[in-house]
Length: 149
Length: 85
Image 1 (cartoon, chains in turn green, yellow):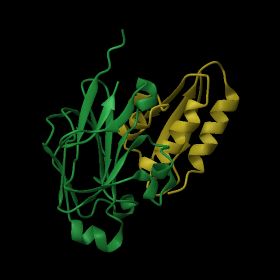
Image 2 (cartoon, rainbow over the protein chains, first blue to last red):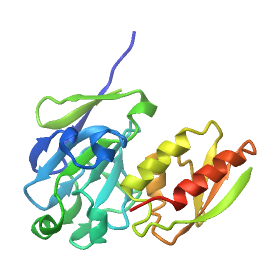
Image 3 (cartoon, rainbow over the protein chains, first blue to last red):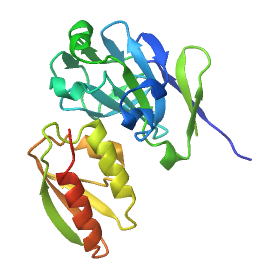
């Protein structure tokens, strides 16, 4: 018998969810990085989408990876092409190696300043679905989506 | 084991997009591949492993390939040097 486990991934932002298909960057739209969705944030907070460990915060603080205890990697990327802002407008509140609970504050960002220069569409991607032979499904309740392993 | 030191030329370093492209390229190799920056050594067939190195433009990394696979080493070194922002 095959037992399937479902991991809830929360929305790390408050905001509308859109398909990766709509993003102009093929790395996201073509799922080269992995599968997921994008969110258009309506405030300046990025919280942890799951219980886990912070694996890395980008040097420019515009993206973060959290690994769950099931070894699922969730990459949260704030905005598109925001690497070119060189960290300006982003403040991180966690360090690599730190344990986090779903809902803990990871990064705050100056939403309005960033929106003047870049798209704020923020991909939330599971980067190791293939390796884990996992897939994502629409979530019930307040989840963003579920990872089925 | 063959090794080569590569300087990252694209200004923004190995952030999400270039790191994704490099991980895809590394995955195509049947040989084991390693990537080292400072004293941290990772398997670059995982995007997230690459991201943990926090590689910036101008940084030097060492690529190692097992099985005396010179072709893979040369290809991956060249791929890294030619990555765009």
